[in-house]
Length: 466
Image (tube, rainbow, N blue to C red; front, side, top):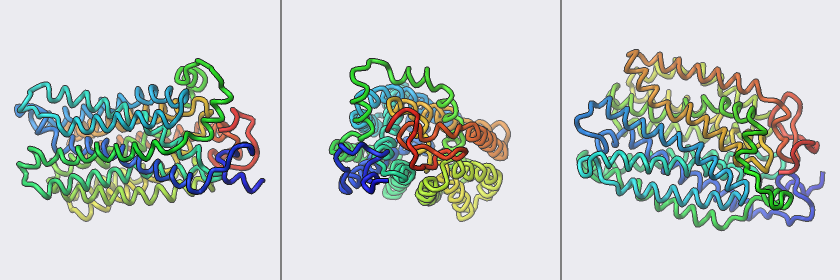
């Protein structure tokens, strides 16, 4: 293999200019910054939905359970908007470029987050408050639905040969980092104000800051060129007017269904460990809000570590073996997790969350590379986004709502553990349904039979370079 190939993602043609180390560094920074700020804004909402919104945006006549369920329902609606965003921005990203789609998605997220920070509560404007909150959450869902696929492709389509998993980790690290910073923002806001001041205005500060941070990420994003894979595909495609979204649904429906199943337990268990656990621990177990925020920050740090380890390992042994380890670990940890959580001992709860989120990161890390390898470059943005976001609707978006409903109806956390286990087995079934030829056919790399995601140097006879 030509030594220069390592400088070209997916074996770029020799007549293309080399990608400099400085450009690769800018791509990594832009990917991490964009994803971190986007997830920061998104998680601000889920944290506030557990701690603040039931009191601020819903009628005082609601019971605590009714207010919490109503607040969590707005989370679910935001998740429903994510695949719509994936389709809209997937079309834009596949037809007009990853960069353009990313910039628009970031701008939409900044506007929605700033507006939430300025939105009057129920006491001021009545029913218009939750209605406006719902609309703004939908905007956040649309933005994140479009942004994730673009950030993942920005990282993986720039990746040197044999490092797609490692480069994909830069996009995936945005989630735990965004969670850490958003939890820290609420921790500081709550600690710096009295309880009354926090509910009156203190919670708004992190949202206003989040909108400003996305603007910074937006400026950095605009300095990055579109990916070499997209530029090559655009030259080959010419003036085709076919819709990438309709094309990927028509030509690759099985792959979309499999991606939904593969990611189901990742998103579902994550929101059980974070939003669902935060509400359960503070309202039922009576653990302090700040203690739980610190525990989730520690868990997110553990997740960041496992993302890096698992993503790099997936370049060596394949995406599926690494993913399977995480899925099995999630199933085995489900009952111990809730047993430790129910102890209501802050150190024990912290350990339970840290272990759970470390295991979650084992699956989340390789997701970027795995999903980008399942679809040809011309419809990759649309395919990866639809599969990922639809899975989040089924798994992640309704997880806090399902958890709260199960706890209320059964009176035991064991029912939630069973819910996580069922999702885990669905994910294992989807992983086993992966066809080895699916991974790598979207570009000039392919995989060894029976080992999805492990790159070898043989050229693919699949969909072309990418």
